[in-house]
Amino acid sequence: MDRRAWWQTAVMYQIYPRSFQDDNGDGIGDLRGIRRRLPYLCDLGIDAVWISPIFPSPMADFGYDVSDYTGIDPLFGTLRELDALLAAAHADELKILLDLVPNHTSDRHPWFQESRASRQSARRDWYIWRDPAPDGGPPNNWRSAFGGSAWELDPRTGQYYYHAFLAAQPDLNWRNPAVRAAMHEVMRFWLKRGVDGFRVDVIWHLLKDDQFRDNPPNPAFRPGQPPDHAVIPVHTTDQPEVHEVIAGLRRVVDEFPDRVLIGEIYLPIDRLVTYYGRDLEGAHLPFNFALLDTPWEARGIAKLIDEYEAALPPGGWPNWVLGNHDRPRIAGRVGPAQARIAAMLLLTLRGTPTIYYGDEIGMPQVPIPTDRVCDPFERNVPGIGCGRDGARTPMQWDATANAGFSTREPWLPVAAGYARDNVERERRDPASMLDLYRRLIAARRRSPSLRLGHYRPIAASGDLLLYVRECPGERTLVGLNLGGHTVPVTFPDGQLRGEVLVSSGADRDGAISQGGITLRGNEGLVMALAPDAVVPASVV
Image (cartoon, rainbow, N blue to C red; front, side):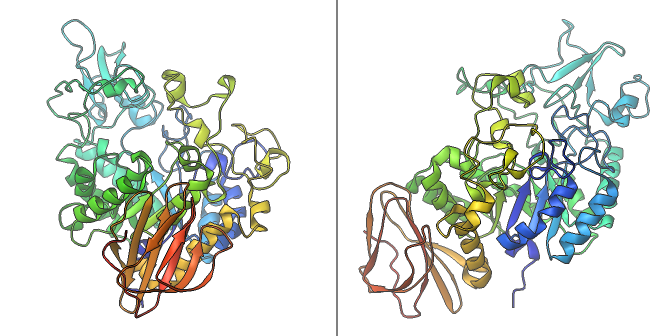
């Protein structure tokens, strides 16, 4: 019997709500659309759904600029419809996580409207205000992730306010206990309503240097990179005191049984793992985005896995991610053939995997015409290849108009190949990406070693990635070819005996009883090993 928390054995699935399913015919996805597609998620084998922000918002950054933390934006529905979604999901044994955005609000949030009203406002210190520099310019050199200075002058009061992102997204002052208390009450509001936890946006940004020192220049900065990379954000992110703030969020979550706190953190592994907190009192799962930036080659990925496993604190539970709403889709990064190998990697590594909607059918990174660009980052900083719209296009349900997403033209264009890559067609194809995801998730459910087993690497060379997941009474071997050429794998210490559980195609199954295996180009195998099979520490 599994004694782990549900989030340790779960397969999670991120929904970008604008793009999942439009139920009311306005071209934008909504809560009723998500509810309509719950049977699909159950059939896929998903355990938990993370929904990107659905709170009231002017949509300057598509929901990441919140104007009311305890409501639902009419674009997506109503509180009653969220309650109905929660009830239906829980009836299907699915968990629902909301996207909490505590670092900043919309500039139209009542808190900020009161804060900027005057320097004497009771909520002035809820945000980060500073006097101009002696020359009248910004207080320091802090940069916005969306281009330009991170400081915006408010002419009415003669001070600047800080915004790590858009000027329409002023940062809250988390050094103020009143801000912490208010956000804790926001969390309790949703937890009492039955939400199963939160993914917390930019959690490593929550505190800034209290001395407001300039960030140092980045000697590695090159033209063509995002302009905020010109400085190293040592004084605007990852402050030592942030862990006490996160521990406070965790204590609120722990007031309610069986809930989870996940943190969005883009940091090197040695810094990422500190967000588990002292004595694991931080985030249950600090999101591990390392696969998003690691070059897609076997030796680098093997090294990454080893480094991550070694860095985890005692009791810290790992997690892996291949894509999200801010990064190019995996099929666009590594190509359709290797996207299948990426799926096998994601769903056989130790820890909790999170699938980005549409990756399970091989949705591509979609080129967006200039006149259809919506992403504020792309509009502010065009031409550097970091636009996010291409990873946010509508879910491809079938070959009908608008891919079955909506009865009218969607807010973003649908991929050109949707008639080929869609749920309806792939459900009928045993060699499809969707069928591969279903087989992998089903194998995880059946296999204690894949859900909970230890990770043991097998040293290999070239394009081969090889490892074993093992627990008492069961061992599962994973072999992945990250290249396009055939790779023979010889086991010198004994015959390889076992049974293929999942192959990246649909033409390789049954027992294996030979001294090795041969992986074709872009092929992966997951194999249940026989009890007496000898697995070496390395292969040629």
